[in-house]
Image 1 (tube, rainbow, N blue to C red):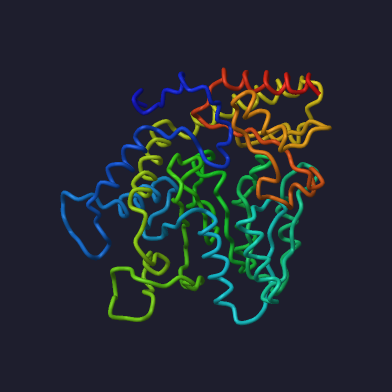
Image 2: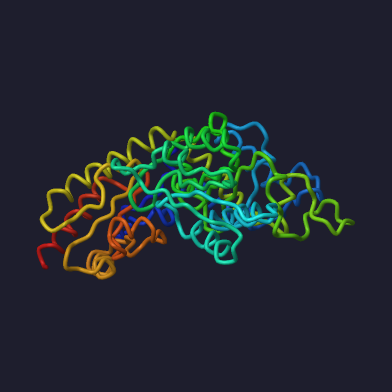
Length: 390
């Protein structure tokens, strides 16, 4: 990796540890790509053909297909973020079903899954089974198999949890759902760019990703991979630049789900972010980030007064409480007194917090490749000082 693509944060007094929400800092190559694309001109699909104008949409789809090891770039749909993707998929699937049906999901899910399901549930469209983690803190594929009923049509699984860093066996879970003729959606918001994902060996029907986390893109970017477009109704309609004489949304991919003017600058930045991850290598990213979080967990484990929600994450985050202190107060003190940006509260994941914190919340420290061991030591020192003051 070229040095110029590694941001210099040595003069920055802020320690950023909220990467599970949005990664920062962004690689210079990403910011440059966004700036260049924002300056235009844009090559809109089906409307313009100029050799000297970048086709940001096609090039980024091609990079996504290579990154996730799939063949067809047109199987990738661009959206605003993972929440947008999950809404399009969940409501689009429900729109295809004429009768009420059963959905299985897990305790690890984000509100981007919970709230769309609740909307469908309160109108009687679906019933929902929430599968809890087993004694090892993961979703047992056998429990998934046991939850499937005759009317089970949809399953939604978070690949990596945003509170515990737990990674699920999506290959086996997807296989079980596939054999049961259950449409499977994998939420990869916390895994894409941090954990190797090979969709050629995973039989999921849809895989959701976001650009602004571990793919190092900017906010407003995301999308999903979809194997069988005819299983999802396009709940959003509008201009696509193709079949414009028809009042019906095109059936072809990806136009079926991409209505309106796309986020060209963001998509260009996403391509640069993917290239950044590929240049470093996910294995190298994992080695550095997981090494740092493991060291930090060990330091926190030795601080009297710190209660860890988990000690063996598979993504670079750790969540903790300090008995007697509200998590939001801890987050405020870390920011104001130590200039450490963390994330406190329920992390938009109320189901797992109801199991682990009785709904009281926690403080989450989430790292990325851009963090340093020195920053982790400062985080541990700050938390230790905070505990000493209680």
